[in-house]
Image (cartoon, rainbow, N blue to C red; front, side, top):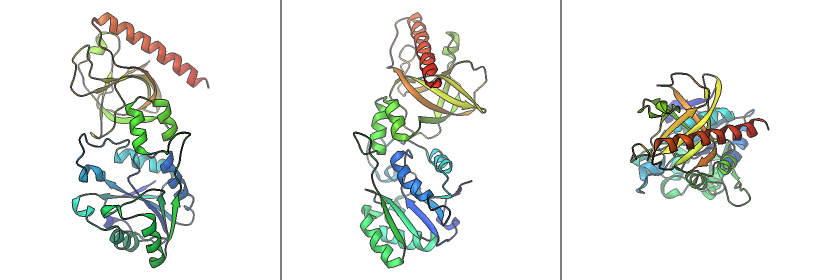
Length: 313
């Protein structure tokens, strides 16, 4: 089981530690190049990821809208644990911490309080004040303090270097299958089922209204999707709608609603992880309710056929 430390003072000093530093938002296949290398040292060293919460851009950035996240901190830690990482130090990131130089961060915190035998860093990663914590500085400090530094090469598909920024763009553009290739898994949203207006129940399509656990979580672009979720140890499939529900309310904020096939269970208050398998169609406004029901039946037929093909492979 992964050990999670929320304060620097909590983690025990161990000079036989291999570590890496970063936000690792999405824990995508590019990140996995670093993390799989980290895990390769597991028999000899403690493996540790040093990450930050809140995301540094949420503290320092002045962009509007705010940066959306591929993973909440909880989702990220769960993914680290699934990979087999020993420990994670989650450093509370605030303005005062941002003033710490990269050299002091390495020497005073990582080297003196955690211990370092090896430091792994991504091909273009930098950290610390003014992003001075680059490979060159690490190599210099490794020579001074006697730890090794490895730089991990970039991971590319046929077209692009894999990055969290690229994946955000693809999710917003509803390119779900391409996103799966970049993540090495389906994109998912974790949230609590809240009570809604129950209009779906009156037309034969009851839905679970999912409120993400992290308000900064990236929701895919508006439209309908084939989805799945593991509920009490069993996999259920269904279709999700993301949007403003123009036929009913035309909300200001998009909602995530999921209609599960063959599920008769009270889901209110449950935490569900919704995995997005395929995009069905863009959101539409229907003039009459009958048109909406007809379209939902078509969406269900599309979803079932898609699932038959996928599950039979």
